[in-house]
Each structure stands twice: as C-alpha cells, then as structure tokens.
Image 1 (cartoon, rainbow, N blue to C red):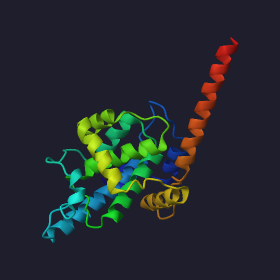
Image 2 (image 1 turned 120 degrees about the vertical axis):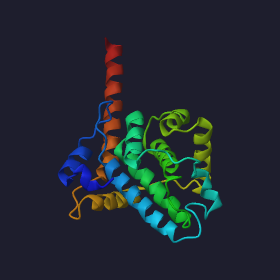
Image 3 (image 1 turned 90 degrees about the horizontal axis):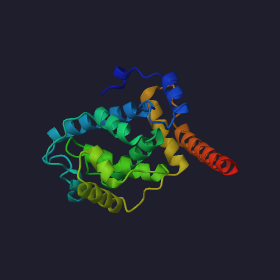
Image 4 (image 1 turned 90 degrees about the vertical axis):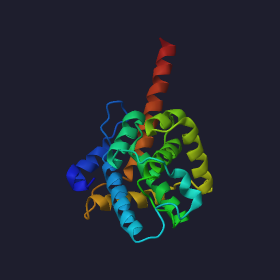
Amino acid sequence: MALTSTIISPRKLRYDVYSYSYQQDSNIPLVISVLASIIDRTLSRNQRIAKNSRFPLSSMSAKTRVFDCNETPDMTIQSYLERIFRYTRAGPSVYVVAYVYIDRFCQFYPQFRIGARNVHRLLITTIMLASKYVEDMNYRNSYFARVGGLTTKEMNKLEVEFLFLMKFKLHVNVSVFESYCCHLEREVSTGGGYHIERTLRCAEEIKTKHREETRFDQIAHLLL
C-alpha cells in the first residue's frame, strides 16, 4: 500500500505521535502505514530478485524456513498490521522495535528474503516480542496466535526459534531506536517532520502518569 494513498502529512503524523493515547478508542498509529509501505516495497523487490534466481524465496537458509507457511494468507500487510493493532492496542514504539528486529534478523541472515509465504508470521512474531520488550502489560502467546491466525503451538515455536536465531539480541538502545525512527521519518517526507523518536518517551510518560493516577486513587480510597 503506497504512502500517497493514505495522504499522510508531516503535521498529521506529528500530531498523531505527540497526542497518542493508550485507550480502547485510540486511532490506528500512522507508523503502521509507513511500515506497511516499507514491507510492501521489500516484497516487490524480492519478487523481482526471485524471478532471476534459481532458488525460491527464503529457501536459501534452512534455519529460517520456520517462518514459511503452506498457504499464503489472503490479507495485505496494511490490513494485517491494522488487525494486530485493533486486537492488541500495541503503541507506535512497538512497531518501530519490531522493524528493528526484522532488519536485524535480515542482517544476521543475508540470504533470507522476506516473501509472501513468511512475512505474516515474521510480523506477528516480531510484534509480539517487541510488545513484550516495550509494554508493561501484554497478552498471552495464545492470544497473539489467534490474532495472527496461528495455533498456540505454532506461535510458541516461532517465538523460541526467533530468539535463538537472533541469539537473544533483542535489546534496542535509545540511539538505535532513534536511528530507525529517522529512517521512518524519511519515508514520509524528505524534509522531516515525523518525530517518531518521541513515541518511546511518550509511551513512558503515559505509563508513568497512569501509575501515578492509580497510586493516587488507591491512597484516596484508603483515606475515605
């Protein structure tokens, strides 16, 4: 899905990031459209490469075949990411960290190619792990499995396999996070304006404020 079709302006993106609220009625983070666009272009590029290659996508590395599915899901990347958000309410920073994991994974295994048969499983796995890394509270693997269209057994296996393939190197420091945010910003506007690096800080501020409000309510309840 092209970014131009969603009419995302830097001002709109900036407002979306700065005012993001972890509520049940929160709008879909605009970073999802940016990430979907990047993945779609990657898929198109890899399909062109596959036409000139003797080997099918992702079969070059036996280790990474765990993400291959027998049937290609009939769902666009944009729709799949929106579905994940709709049922998990993962904040914008989760998708940035998931993007870091995907890129890091591809660097670890240069012969791996993201394709139609593995992209959905790779996304749900990285988003689930990114959510566990970023968020204070998370759903069980069984819930992520239902959201992603997998069985709990498949979801658990993908998580373990990914962790070992990544050698458990899932830490994302601030400088790395911001560098990937800058890359996503350039996807929107060459002049910048999508200050997505604030999402991690905003998320922390929101969660801190929520904890303070909860603590205040508990104290007030004791005094009444």
